Each structure stands twice: as structure tokens, then as C-alpha cells.
Length: 107
Length: 241
Image (cartoon, rainbow over all chains, first blue to last red; front, side):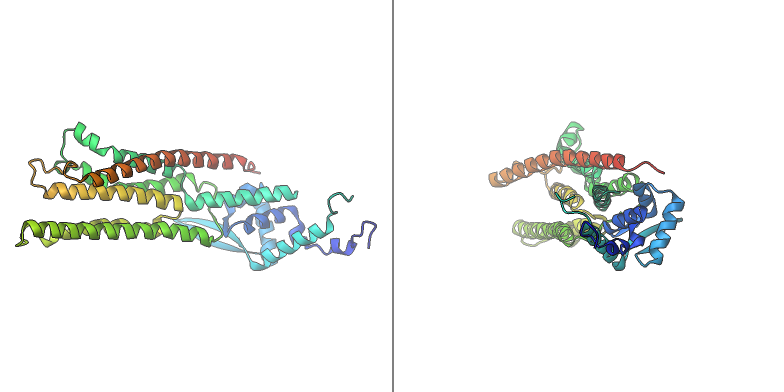
């Protein structure tokens, strides 16, 4: 137990897949809708195509999102949807972070 | 990235998804405008010096709800899909309200047509006990407005557009009835007239028409406001990396 009453192990226990800012943004966007197109995700997170692809691959590898590939006419469209594991991980991450942050009025 | 940033990101996504699900905005405003044009259609008929059944104007008007559906689809494709599709999370309450409007419209058309057919049949039978005046095919034509129901479950994805469509179809039903009456009228110009209607019917019609006028004005304002909000939402998005 540290000086502030925080368990340092709890900080290290944070899900590192979710903890990365870009991936946290991606999961937040996906959790707010049923299915999100690559284009919107790229625009809303401000990431480059390559960066976004790399992060979504990592999240897919962890089982937090699934890729949906479809065609609109002849144009291939890639979309993503968050999995139940992804939702649970995001919820758990928020709870962990809230528990780690100092309460209001206490430094 | 702060909690506020994340909350803003989630709100932005939800709002965008709602806009995409409704695809209203300009389509609602356009629907309001069309409803006003419908309301004032008799003025053009008089101004042009044409009689309803002597001109195709009325038939074109009867196709207006379908024209609005096509325009709405085009506007949706052009305006509300430019950043890729975002499907909103399922909302049972919203879906229930959407179906309330669609089923309400179906019920209205069904009751309206049934009453028309019963009224026509009893009227003609009273006037011509032999029943030779009204042939079966002409009576069957009264069921044609049921075609308005065909595209409803697939093309009306939002409550606002279900409401616009219901008003346009409701107005069309009045025109359809006027057209039918005019066609079967024995008057020289085959024109139906309000003067034969009872005072109660006239008052109901005036209230109905005023109601449509107020609704149209509100729809135009609301639609335009929604479109402006959508543009503001697009401006709120971060610039491309």
C-alpha cells in the first residue's frame, strides 16, 4: 500500500490493451454504437489509416472487437463492432481507473 | 485523453448514429414544404383554369409521397453518409414509436377506405336500386391507396420521417377522394364541390387543413434546425491526421 492508500499493484494491473489512448478512444467510440465504419473511426479519433489498422488488429487479437467486411455496390467497406469481452474490458477499465483516482477534495 | 474527452467522443458518435438512423433534417423540411404545396393545390388548379380530372395535376399530386421517399433516400445518401456508416445501438422504445406511426397510418388508410367504400356503395344503391351505376372495377379502384403502405417498413427508418409520410399520405387520401368524387360526379366539369358537404364536415376539414399548415411550418423549422445541427456536428469532428 502506497502513501496515498493506493495499491501500486492495482495500477500495474490495468488492462494495457485498453490503457493505450488510441485504443481507449477506439473502444469508447465502438461502445457508443452498434457498428462503426472505418472512415468514421479514423476521422473521429484523428488517427492515420496505418495507425488505426494496427490498433484495431491488436484489439481484434485480444477479442475486444470484430471486423465486418461488406460491399456497398463495388466498394469494399470495413466496419467494426465491439464484442461483449470488449465492453466488459472497457467497463472494468473505467472502474479500475475510478478506484485509483483520488476522491474529490483529497490530494 | 481525459474523461471529458472520452465522454465528448461517445456523445459525438451517438449523435452521428442518430442522424444516420433518421436521415431526416432536410427531408423533414422538404416534407413540410410539400405538405403546404398540397394544401394549396386547389389554388393552382383554379389559377391554371383546369379541372381536376381534366388534367394530370391531381395524379401527379397522388404520386407525391413516393416522390418524397425517393428524394429522402437521395438526400440521405448524399448528406448523411459522407463519413461512413455508423449504426446506432438498438433502441426498443424508439422502434416501438416508429411502428406506432406506421401501424397508425395503416389503420387510418384501412378505416378511411372502408368507410369510403361503404358510403359509395350505400349512396349509389340508394340512388339506383338496380345497382347498375357503380361497376365493381371502379369500386375496386378505391383500394389503390393501399399501395402507400408498401414501402413503409423498409423506407421509413425514423419517427420523424414516418410522421412526414403519414401527413403527406393523409393529404393524398383527401385528394384521392376528391378525385374519385369528381370522376363520378354528374356535373358538367366533373368537379366535386365543398358546398354540398354538411357544416360539421366543413368545420372538420378546415380544422384539419389548419392543423396541417401549422405542422408543416413546424416541420420546416425543425428539419432545417436538425440539418444545421448535423453540419455543426461535422465541424466538431477532428481534422484528418
